[in-house]
Image (cartoon, rainbow, N blue to C red; front, side, top):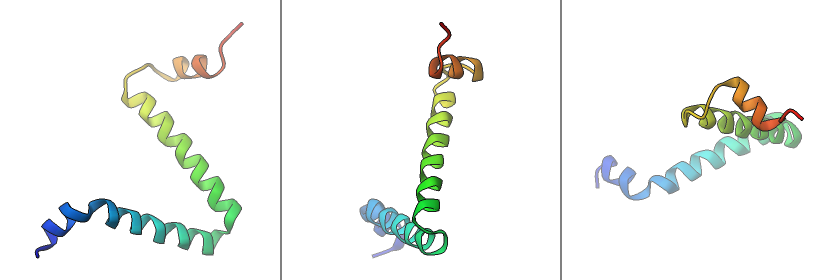
Length: 70
């Protein structure tokens, strides 16, 4: 079995284990609350980045969507 077929067959498992190892290291090094804050901010950054990738507008449209004017 070559590494390419191993990656194709078990990609999700490999990525899942890698994410779990990184998460455990972060928890050990930073603590629970700093790791939680890092994950929350990472998710927010991912959400904002996907908003811009979809071409829905610029910064002004994003702020208007989050905090509409009255």
